[in-house]
Structure formats: C-alpha cells, structure tokens
Amino acid sequence: MIDGVLQVLVGGLLALGGAFVGPFFQRRHERWIADREDRAVLRNKAEELFDELDSFVLKSQGASIAALARMQDSGVEAKPVPDLGRVRAIAAIYFPTSLTMIDAYEATNLEALRSIAEQTEEALKAGEKGLATLRGMPMKMAIEHQQAAASFVAELRKHLSENVPTLQLEKI
Image (cartoon, rainbow, N blue to C red):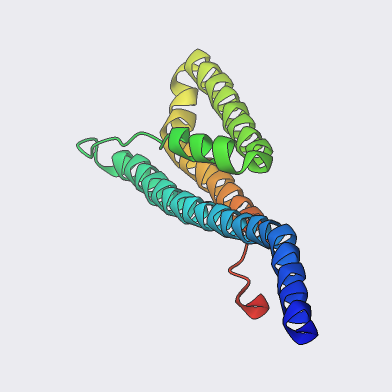
C-alpha cells in the first residue's frame, strides 16, 4: 500500500515539475527557432544584396566602356550609370550599419560630378584650347567612376561578410 502511495506521490511531483518546467523549455525552443529564421532571412537578404552589387558592377562597367567607346564612335549608345536604389533599400531595412558606406560612395560621386562640371565649364570658356580637355572627359569620368565603384563594392561586401550571421553548423 505504501509503495502504491509513494509511486503516486512521485508521479504527481514529476507531473507538477514537468508542468512548471515544460513551458520554459518550450519558450526557449520557440526563441531558438525564431532566431534561426531571423538569421536565415538576413542571409537571404545578404545574398540578394550581393546579387544587386554584382549587377551594379556590371552596369557600371558597361557605362564606362560605352563612355570610352563613344570617344571613338559617336554611334555607340550611351549607358547611364546604375542607380543604387535597390541596394540602398535592402541595406536600409536589413543592414542599416552599411548605409554610411553608401552615403560615402554617393558623396564621392557627387564630388566627382562637381569637379567634372567645373572642368567642363573651364574647357568651354577656353574655346579651341578646351576641346582636348572635353574629348578626354569621358575617359576621366569612366576611370573615376570605376575606381569609386570598385572601392565601394569591395568595402560593402567585406562589411556584409563580417556582419551577416553564419550558419553556425559547428554548434549543432
């Protein structure tokens, strides 16, 4: 009889202990799943941002090559310098610490455009003597843009590689 009562008491205590401890482990497991899903979203957005950066580099190179080709053949279609709208949007939402790099790149571009505008104005004022300067402007613009773009993309890729959560497979 005492054995039966003892078994019931032990069983009851274990059931009560499980009722108190169970929700703690359930919340912990749910938090782990949510964290894992958040890391997966960040990795996916980082991959999307890397793809956008690759596209930016290709379009940037295409615009530079077209600018240089137009120096030889005016029939070559001019290509616009690519926009950073999508890169900025993804970065602003998922990687806000990288916005300073995007701002710095855009500031560098603006500075280069102002410099080119000033040089163009001076060349136009110089008349015949300024023609050589004007002819060389596409090459100067292309080189400056490519240097700034290459530096920006390398810096942003490095930043993302260091800040995007890894798979953490070694902790499984």
